[in-house]
Image 1 (spheres, chains in turn red, cyan):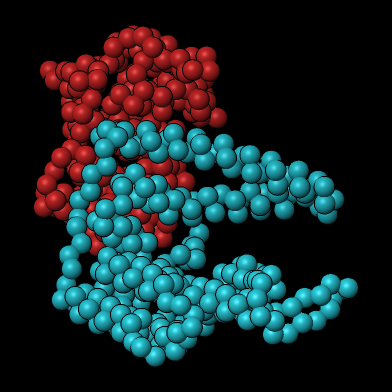
Image 2 (cartoon, chains in turn red, yellow; image 1 turned 180 degrees about the vertical axis):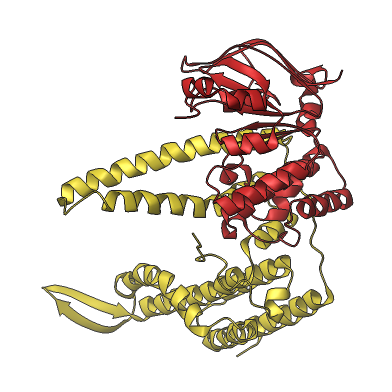
Length: 236
Length: 256
């Protein structure tokens, strides 16, 4: 069995002393779609940032596609793990859509011609072809979210990691975005506290609370356990 | 929210808009240099410079009112710097009057400097307005980059352009939040609130910068700026640059 992600005893403490993750053990096989649920401040986003070495744990080990996340592997790992941030205004930082989607491929060392092709393909696959010359501040939040996905798809990642994909989206934009994520065939790790999103997109669910894994199992089983959801602030 | 205080008219289609940003950067710089190196005694040259820039502005199809309003933002500053020269320059007296017991006199040299500063500043400002209103900022930055401006500077400018609007929205939201909770607070109270808002804005921007940097790292940023698409000069650029430079040189060198 191929493992996309392996975490072993991963702990992380922020410089201000706050313990965000406490000994996380987690294995995600290739091709699985996993939801990471949990109340605010549970450590979900912190965990995601470990998956391509943007932050590195105080203790424990992270392996991506069999390779340990360490300095010499970072370049390769970052091209394989597409990390999409929650706020598209953080994800999109270039003056034009083209430059933003091209940022990843260019950093990977693609030739101008290949960059151009990757950008067109990525924008095409999120339904945003023809937006190349627009500026992010002229786009709606739904459009920005789609382009955020395109910025990582342009790198042809094997693992897609999305932080809160549907926050701030109205129902129509939300479902359109869910449909988009459904069309992507790769290992996906999605954080959300929207149970509809989790039910539609993910086969497996993990509940994270106060930096620890509180539950892990098939989505139907987790979502059926109302007491569990209530304990961790996911249902009222 | 939709802001258009930058790039408002950059979307018009005209001969000038279609030019390569580098052509416009270089010709504008040349124009500003020529204007500022021409002595004011050659005053017919200034009339001709003005005619030249007026023709180009006409070609660019920018609304005249917009160009005038833009220049009005800057001209008062120049005026206040220049106006003192009228009185403080030593030389041949042309007129004098008394204000509150002070004797003020206008000298010929003072008048020369005043009119020189005003004419040069107005022309330079018109040239720059033409450049900045006919070129979308992303393209202008691309042009600067290919002209050899260090990538770090280009990057800083492009972040500025990208986040100016985000910050403006943030300020607007904070202002709305304040206004919806403050009922006729006293002036001093207001000032304190504004101070807090500036502090909050700074901290939020700092935190955003960290998140943006994380997003850049996540996509393979290694501290090296690399660029992709390149601009290409077209025949129209060569024609425009040649015509414009010849006109400027002719005006600058003609023996009036």
